[in-house]
Image 1 (tube, each protein chain N blue to C red):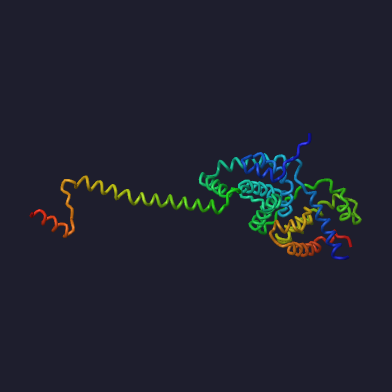
Image 2: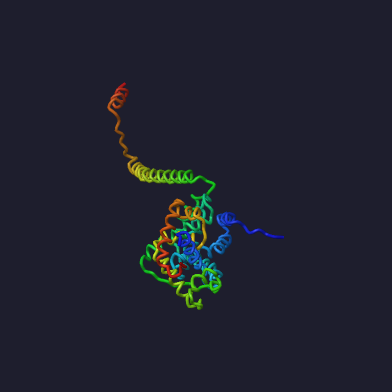
Length: 126
Length: 194
């Protein structure tokens, strides 16, 4: 027998597997089960995962180029990070300065450069 | 007046816009076909049911990322095949068969009659034997070969479509089919008429 005929017979035999089917009502119940599982999954999933998925979906919007979205997101993250870092490093200094000035204002001492001091004393002597 | 059913792509767009019922419609449309695909690769109803649920859950989660570069049909089949491959890798050599009942229509199928009527008029006695043998033979194939045989021989998909789903060339599809058929011939010899 030719290989083509053998192949044909194999195909015919395998197509009999189409008759192996789940019970009639299986597909009717399948959708209901799917909906139940989906709801259960939403309840079970932690908040950060839902947020992450939403973000991914947002980045995958078809009408906005992905790279542009990802780029602007990265810029936004860096900008926010820099602002937070700057304000963190500035805030304690400002606080410290204000505390120092309020405490030391009555007896504040300015250290002036030598030229300025000599110029001032020369004027005083006039 | 006749109302036209929405196309898959229209349902996808509606799902993306937040219409969960549109996705339900896609589940109804695709579940019988994807069930057949997964079932013939796993030979287990329980595993098929769980996998099919996971396939649709995954598709729903990633549907906004579907860019329509391929048809929704191809996209769904790719998800189903990949998830089944991953599952089979984990299941490894645990070969469980919980075969679905065979539809009685098979008894009148000329191919079944031809395969089982070698002097034995009792078709139903041969039905179980044939089903067992077919599934054992399928399980002996590698996962790659089994996928190609399922899609081509059982589901009747063209080579080009299988190539797209598996992301391989049509030549590779043909070559896998050739080797898979050779292997199946050895296992199913008793049912092949000489």
